[in-house]
Length: 338
Image (tube, rainbow, N blue to C red; front, side, top):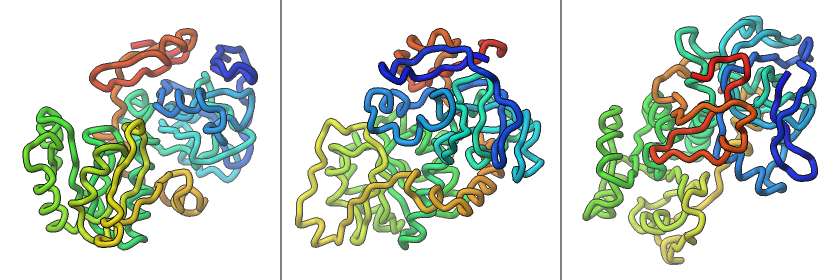
């Protein structure tokens, strides 16, 4: 079968012919891949060898952490209802030396890396979704444990922010979504998101402070970092914790006056789904996967697809950029491109 692997010396991506998996080992599934998502992290990991961590574990150095397809075989200890079902996959949730990465015609992964999709949706529409869903799910679990009941989310109308909106509503957690333009504000409101503020509006800081105090939004879900983090810090309620999970504005240092840490009991901490109790604890991960099965087909979880590429077009796909935020996806040889 065809697969995209990482050359061990050059770290360049190359299309190889490798053996297809046979009967999966215990706990694993074999999936016929229908589409693969290319995430921001894929480019980061390839450029920074030390950042990849466990993403290169498994057989043949096959790359890919996001995809969707249909389960063709299950190993021992995997629930039988996985067999034949469409699934969204986020490989990095569970590490295994028997893994065959997702940028391949057939992948082999632990079942705990897969969420079963509703039969009525197209797997392609969710080929990059699970990474964007598990992150806010684990975050909401974390802030509940930390005693927070409301959220300020900085990442606008990104896929992760939209997933947060769905999951928070399910838990009755109030979220203030910060966007960067009037168009994004109207888009968010059109999607049914209630509390939205534009950072470009006059009086934004005052509006944020009043609304955050009213809603008890003491947890900041920060996918940007940089200038906005420093800008909102003086206006958050006392006992607020800022959870940094993204690097979209990483080129700008975060500037927060020392007095705010004292006067507001402000806390800034890193959040990583990999290191969250939800993902690190196998039992909690299984529970999370089961819980997400009931909502995974939500339209707001769909991967925003910009353009589909064949495996041999991997270099072009990695360079692809879409002004509207559409993502490049990879489609195996036997699957129609469109």
